[in-house]
Image (tube, rainbow, N blue to C red; front, side, top):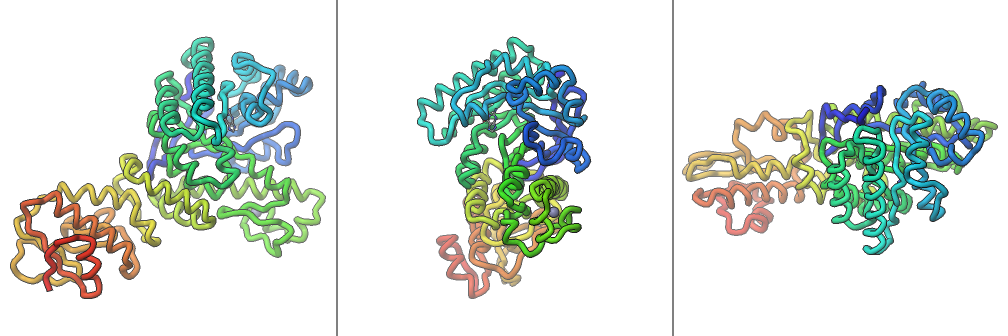
Length: 481
Ligand code: GUN
Ligand code: ZN
């Protein structure tokens, strides 16, 4: 049976959806916790009880251990792990990226993944590191694509195989890879080789690589961000259009005695309090957790709950149309996330086409809000207003005579006809006292209105304190006193 994906709601380029593989369906965005059979602080059954609808494990690890290999082949992964949700398996490509080689071929790993009852198989793609030069990125991408073609040819078009998108840091290669993977018929596309970017907090580069891949991947495909990550970056990744995460962070951080929060992490040894509503944190003091013989496991349980809860929060934000607000909040917790957020805002022009028409609210949260998709879309709308010959834009509520129409002004959007005053975004926007950034953004709306209505006389009635800025931002405009 093919992997299918259905989108039910959107916000920015993020979506709520349903991913179906075999007879198993999960809601997206989803977190697939990584299960390592050798050292597992939390069992798969516990994960299911915590609300994880799917998990990911590494087929290569199973194939290299005689004991695990035989049990996986005879019982199947679902019975072996005690998990009846969706199980995705990785191929050994990650080991390839760490150790440089693996003792398995593409078809061997795919057939093994099928034999142990995986719901989604991953071919032996080549994760090209971000510092690789163009020649290496092209060669390795060629090899990855050949393996994807081989998988389709030998397992058939409907086999539940993921189509990883590689291409290193080269945006044109990523876009082309995304397009080819789509053309080959893959409906589930992991964006690969981004772990080094996330490990070194290069969120700006991450955004550029993922948005480039997304430009090529068909909008109807489910997108998995391979190896992500920390819950603080989930909202940013979802806003770019990532649907699936496969985090090992809950276990890796626990091993280092680190305590995850939705906005960062802390050293357990430095905590006096456990500021989290989960069952573990409410039933232990920081000191009790530290001195427990089960400390690592308790931390892993907490870390996983935090990660799963963040996914729920994101799903609700998409439902309500407030994902920008959540991204803004999360990305202010680390300067490199802020860099990623700003990189995402730089792509607002291409994200706008995916964004929904109406949302619950637009909360202004500072100058970054001026670059949001809703502002970009609003400015594009200026062109479509039909206007009489003499138009006044009233920034101060005054309506001096001599005009056929007065348009009120709402920063960061700009002028608006009365009939749009109750609709999104004008009617649902909440702004504090005007600041320079938002008035400048509103002036871009005015500028656009003027440029697209050359036969129209446009004048502005403006509070004294903003006159200089308006004259600077809308050069040559008539300001009525
Ligand atoms: N895990 C983290 N990154 C990757 C990747 O690029 N490919 C595969 N197969 N697994 C990964
Ligand atoms: Zn907790």
